[in-house]
Length: 217
Image 1 (cartoon, helix red, strand yellow):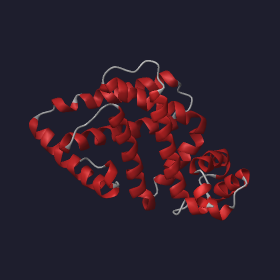
Image 2 (cartoon, helix red, strand yellow):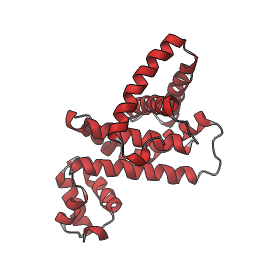
Image 3 (cartoon, one colour):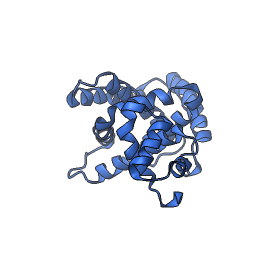
Image 4 (cartoon, helix red, strand yellow):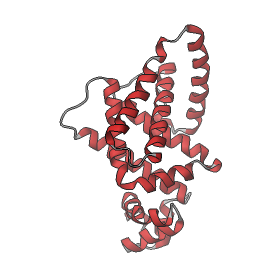
């Protein structure tokens, strides 16, 4: 029975209830009822409960981002422009589900979900870099993902805290954050060495939390 259920359909059904019930078992049960599916079968799709549901929600958002990027009539030129476009695609796609995203971030902010939060963030920024054509390894692989994780996290925080800012302000915010990180390669050698140590620590943490198919080869 579980194999016949589309997890993404369940997530989409849950999104109707999350603004009222939060990311809870109640929202999951309501989604099952809406779809006419046995509640136990739906629960079996998410072995870690709400945490698994949020993981699936972000994964679905990643898939939507990839599809929307592929459908662009005009592709942005250059890596920075591509990354910016991908972040804006994510924000545009998340706008109808702002409350669900905000609640998901609060849930992921709890200590017991720290590992999941890192894995989810890594998966998204890794997808962005790969769509931008990145094939780097070693220091560059992790440094790029660490920097983009910071930019994307800051952007999400700004987006959640400023719901009425408007798309132009979000776009300016993203542009400013990207400009800030592009100057990092110009720092002095001692500063770069210190940054290398920090990035290596992040890389080791990501390596432990991410599955083999998203690690650098």
